Length: 217
Ligand code: ADP
Ligand code: 5GP
Figure 1 (cartoon, rainbow, N blue to C red):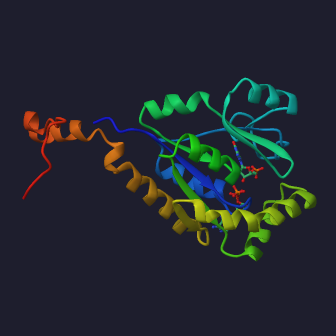
Figure 2: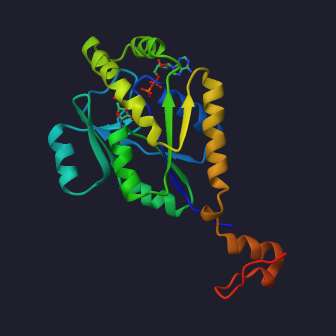
């Protein structure tokens, strides 16, 4: 039976652990497709162009905005970030789960365009731990860390708009919760070709027609 794919949006303050949790879940669910965003922010030491982000100049980013190449895009802490549309449609048609790590402004745009997407918010255990994680990652300047911390409270408040919330205290526990959400969402009746499934189980009698009366017991 062919399942319909879906988009899973993962948001949360910078440093909450979105990438770390996603890496853990991708090891357990190899069929997940990670949507690689484009950004104008500088590449961090351990990042790779095309794997973590497509690193673009401001002009290149603007050209892509004007060409309508992004599903959504937003400015976050002084840099632009956007989701290229190209691979998303292809993956959804193949029945895959496409995971996007995007900020709340981008998530709101996706909700308008694709309301059937699944929205998950990742929270840090405490603000003190968030700061510790941002500093421990040692990939951003003090100024960038300060801007990210200043933005975090407003972002945390916006978590109420999401379908699911996960507190990333212990990595294994947070990853297991995200995996459970993916498994449950895959089982949604509206995401399966339910009539095909029924036909496989009960043969011809399983064909659902528009004239079918509601079931009585
Ligand atoms: P984000 O993608 O949300 O910006 P990262 O995944 O880069 O955050 O994580 C920020 C830092 O916090 C990294 O150094 C990462 O190793 C650490 N981290 C993530 N999750 C946990 C956790 N559950 N416990 C301890 N440290 C964590
Ligand atoms: P970072 O610079 O730490 O990699 O990401 C900063 C913020 O940008 C995070 O909140 C992350 O979710 C968000 N982000 C990453 N890619 C995209 C994207 O394509 N679109 C939007 N709107 N936000 C993104």
